[in-house]
Each structure stands twice: as structure tokens, then as C-alpha cells.
Amino acid sequence: MSTSCFIGATSPDTPHLVHARYVLFDGHPAVVLPTLAAIWARHAHHDTAALISAVLAHDWEHLDPDTTTATASNFAGQQPVPGVGMTLASSTDGVIDAPEPVTVFPLCHAGHLDVEWVYLIEAGTSTIGVHTSDGTRIATYQLISCLHPASSGPDQESCGSRVAAGAPR
Image 1: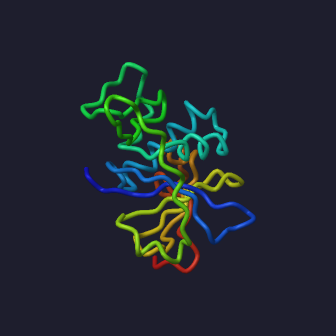
Image 2: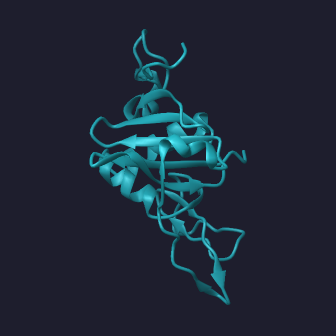
């Protein structure tokens, strides 16, 4: 898949501003939600703040909880981050450049970005808000439900806890 996205979080002090990282590949909810849940469980040990820190550390070619130090990239300058994914980095004359700064934008301006999806990880509730390319929140998912879809109850969709307030059903 070549769907790009932003994944990040807001802070209680500035809930209208998103702090996010770009992910080049596999940005569709069917891939991102279970991938973030697996990174949360394995790499971050169910610590949502640690998941946010791991995601915000780099821009990403792709996220993959099965990434190891031995995972190779076909592109120069990209580095594997074990348990998280492959960075989207560049190099100049064999010297790896420092990561780009975190992207900060008002969610209401998401339509100006060239991505199809924006995901906001909510540390206090261990949830992920899924937003369309224009910033409209369409759903909120519990990380634990995305990790164990079989544990969803009869009134709960797999990998989903609730539709966002005001979203069409």
C-alpha cells in the first residue's frame, strides 16, 4: 500500500495543535490500527506515552513491530528502529542527517496536508482517534481492542470501541 498518513498526539495544554510524524507507506486504518497496537504492547509495554514518544522520534517509511536491528532498507540513510519500524531518513555523502523536527499543525488545517489519514494517540485513554484527510474524526479505537480483536464483545466491532461523536453511522 502507498497510503501516507500522519500519526501523533495533542497535548492537554494545546489540544487544537497536533504534533505528528509522517508515515510514507501503509497508512490505511486496516494496517495502522493493529500495527500501533502491536508496537504499544511489545515495544512500549502497554505504556501509551511511550508509544507516542516512539512514534514521534522519527518520520517513517513504514511502521512494523517486527522490525529488528538486522532489518535492511533498500534506501540509503534509513535506519531500522527495533519494534517500531523503518525511518524515513536521508543521507548526504554517507553521513546520516538528523531527523526532521516533529510536524505541528492545527487539526482544522489537516486538509492542507498531502495525506489521506491522521491518527491521534490519546495517552490518557489508550485510544486512537482516526481522522480523514480534512481532519474530520470518524472513529475512536481502543488499543487493546486492536491488539486482541477476538476479545471484542458482541456489541463491539473488531478493533473498534466507538464511533466518534457527530460522525455518521
